[in-house]
Each structure stands twice: as C-alpha cells, then as structure tokens.
Image (cartoon, rainbow, N blue to C red; front, side):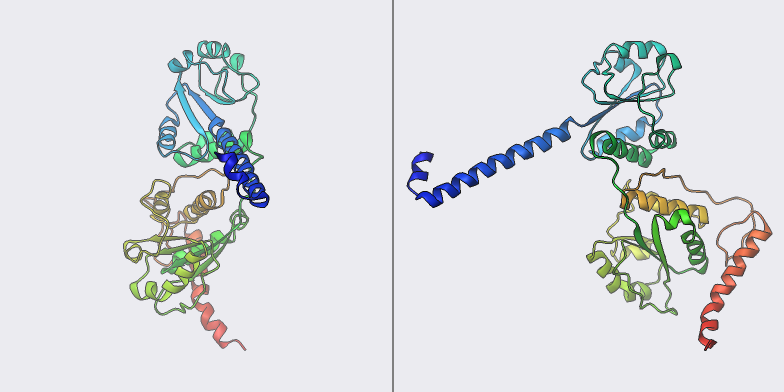
Length: 344
C-alpha cells in the first residue's frame, strides 16, 4: 500500500517523501540514542552513616536532572550487585562491608571513596571539589556535587560559569555600604559585577535594570516599587531572575524566583542579618544557582547576641575600631552627592 502510493505520486514527490522518511527514521534513532545515554547515566551512593542521606532523598524526590541517583546503606549494599555501575560513591564503610562489595565492584568504574579504611580503600578518583562538597553537605551542596560528577564522568567536563550582572535595590544606607564592600572583594568580582541602587522616594529612581541577569529588590515602599516596575519588567523580559524580599515587594508579583521553593528559600535567610559575610555567601549562592558555578554554599551567619551596634552600620561589630571604620564610610557616602554638586 505504501509502495503503491509513492509510485502514484510522480518521481520528484516520491523521492522527497522517501528522503523525509529516511531523515525521520534517523532522527528517531538519534533521539533514542540520546535518551538511552541519559537513562544509563547513574551514580550510586553507598553510605555507612546517615550523613547527607536526607539531601539525597530530597534530590531523588524532586526528580533531579538527567541522571539516575541511588543510595544504599551497608546492609542493602551487601546484597546488591554493583558490577554494572559506572560511578559509585563509597562513604564511611567498615572493612567487612567493603570486602563484600569488592566481589561485585566494577574496578574500571569511577569509584569515589571517603572515610574508608586504608586497607580497603578501592577509590580511584581524587578530586577536592567532590570531597569539599560532600563534607559541606546539605541539599544545595549535594545537588552541586551530583551536577559536578555528572559533568566530570558523563560529560565533556565542567562548563565555565557565566559572570553575572547583578543589581541590588535597597532602601537602607547600611545595606548599600555592606554590599558595596562585598562587591569590591576580588573573590566576588570574579563571579559577578554588582550594582547597588537606593530604592527610596527621595532618590533618583531612573536607573536602568534591563541588562541585568539578576535583580534583587528588598523592603521597598510602594511608590518606589511602582516607579521601577517598568525597568524590572524589562529585565525580566530579557531573561533576568527577579527576586523580591519582603512582603510588600512580593505582593506586587514582579518576581519570577519563588522564595518558598526549597531551591531558593535560603535567600531569605541571608537577609535576616546584614553582614559582609552573609552577603558574600549570598553571592556564592546566586552564582551556583544561576550561573552553574561549582562552589560550596555556606550557611548563614547568625546575628551575634553581644557586640557594638549603630543604625548607620547595620552589622554588629566586636570592636569599636571596626565600627568606626564603617561609620566613616557611611558619612562619606552620604556626603558624596553634596561634594559632587559643588565641584566644578
């Protein structure tokens, strides 16, 4: 039937349809090959303790990326055949368990080992990124670890991370000063270019955010939010990640990053206590999540119970000398517009 239909169409159309069919078949074969490759990409974790067990469960539940993740405790591992595994992570196992595992391990596989007895350490991967991320632990770092291992063992290496253009719109002087200090840190400026803007009604709000990769707005008043809405929407239309911190800012629904999502909820935590260290850790968080950087995400620094505080400084200091230096910067920053206006 198919042959008869082709013959009845004339040579040109028939050849075209045959070519289309051949191309379609090739495309299907290619797609099946790609899907099969992804389905065969897997990492198995064999855990002797519960360290990072919960993050692994959360990642598996969330349907993490293009790789299959499995984990086993020591008892389960003793009855599991690992001969088909290409990547396996052995953690904190005793000699007896490792001896049993050795009977089924594929020693040509990538075997990552951590905290194993020297006499039974079958690891053949030495990578400080893997050990650093595993030691730091937690949902974000284990997810970065899996992404890194996927790139390293199944891909063509870890792609270079993008340098981000990030805008912070704050209403408080101390937040601006603190973030500007962080922006000048070479470790941060290598990851991103940071721009800070005053989000107050008595300030110039004509700044342009349309070329930013990330826009963070925090605790802004309604008139400010309404004034900058067009430029925020322009940034979002150009693919920016927009983050709103504070109930009022969130109520305007300008954001496209959900801070209730486990993936991004820690952003709120970094803003609970303004300090240079918290803001630095926030920049790392943003770079890992939005630029694909391989780095350890550190937890937030909690507000000290005792210390020296001044409302212009924001951060709590352990010494008067540190506080004085920050206050001097605040005074200079406040005086700068006046100085610029009187200079020729």
